[in-house]
Image (cartoon, rainbow, N blue to C red; front, side, top):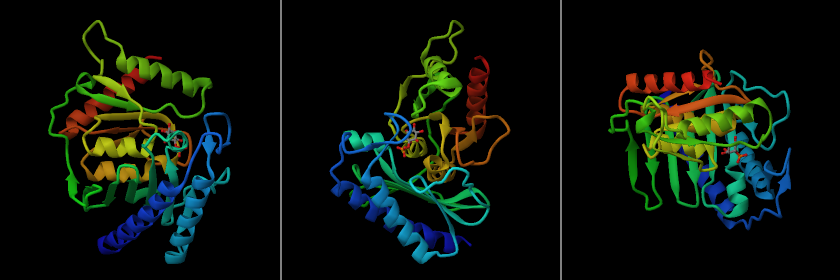
Length: 288
Ligand code: IPD
């Protein structure tokens, strides 16, 4: 029920704030971090400690719910249909290691594999984004003021009108990398027919925050090939509740999966405009 989901959202906001305190108190460094699969895929003791704290809080309060977290994930683990907390203790770990103040705690509740509550908190700016299905999305700023996130009032008719975000991920070879690099160049390159050259490209280093930035109307389109579910689940419901559109960049495949999916988030004033941007991006992807 909505009151129950709202209660969970409030609870997750408190957990995210506690996690944020741990992140701000940490003294991260690139040298102090460990490599996962390659030099750009890193984890710090803080990622692990924050996830352990979140896991303890969530399982103590909701013992019947499943838990899927970035740092405790085991290959083969699936996003179940049961109520599941989907957790990224620090989305933007590389930013965190380098001291670039754009990283977030990302907490979602999924039911039947769909996000229904999302909380994304960037402790460096004090931005707390949250949403409960059916209740809209809110940005609470560091000074405590709250803003309901709504449709971008700017008319957007094509990618030509858009500030676009892409992320680079940490796999730097193979077909997915080729797609990412080609798409990034294609978003930026002037076309002879005047079509499809976006205003510019941004890469904030946190997919969760990119979704929230689209929800806030600061960015119009976010495209990434190859997010994990904990990168996107919370931002997904926040953007939907702000009136945006989230689609898998694979036409026809709309559900959040655990790994390696392509996702896009789009904000525009009208659903028709959002859909036409999706078509434009799919067309670009098909041109490879
Ligand atoms: C990563 C960030 C990054 C995106 C990667 C993610 P992490 O999450 O969201 O922007 O490009 O695909 O894995 O590892 O910092 O939690």
